[in-house]
Image (tube, rainbow, N blue to C red; front, side, top):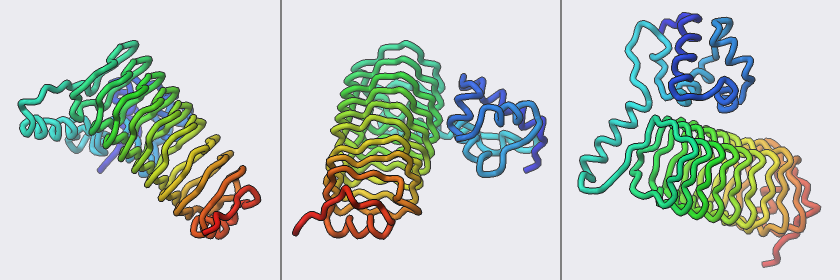
Length: 295
């Protein structure tokens, strides 16, 4: 794929404006500075191939989009093709297509029957309280200051999305997948994370008090300024980076830790079974706040 530096810059601008996100928000989703995005758009530099791949995901395009020599098929179009197939299978079921929308200050409380049609959208200050939204495919969305309290989002998939300052109190996030997504300053108090998977993204400064953690997993995640205060059972943390993470009054059962370092985790009045204790010890965690559960 032959890519011209000026062409790439112009196409980044075009795709970014199409989904209505700022340079700062795009940079946040890529874990880089807004200045770096500015240099790309001015044609002063280009992303490396790994960043380019994630950039394409966020903008809802494929890599051919950045070249003049090949036709491009947007990720949104691919999602629509999948949706069309699902429509043929469920043609008698009422559904709503809310993809590629700019939703601001809207009240969708009690919404039902979305059927995987909510991608490449900008959502700010919206209400989804008590909504039935299970099985959604939410890809390349920017979701900010929205309220999903008491909603069912089970078996949904969040891909390459930015979620910040949202409320998910008492939600069902059972069997949900979060992949390459940046999740910051969200309130997950009382949320059920049973079977939830977090992969290759960031989970920063979120409230997770009284959450349910069972068969939940964190793989390749950045965890920063998080306090776990609930029982954690049959869970695993692999390839994660921890900063200011605290486990307080937590019972850890059959939980796997395989990370480069566990030294930045703080344990306060915690208990662990012998297997979990061994994983923590092997990772050189400070175990002064962990007592061994007697069999």
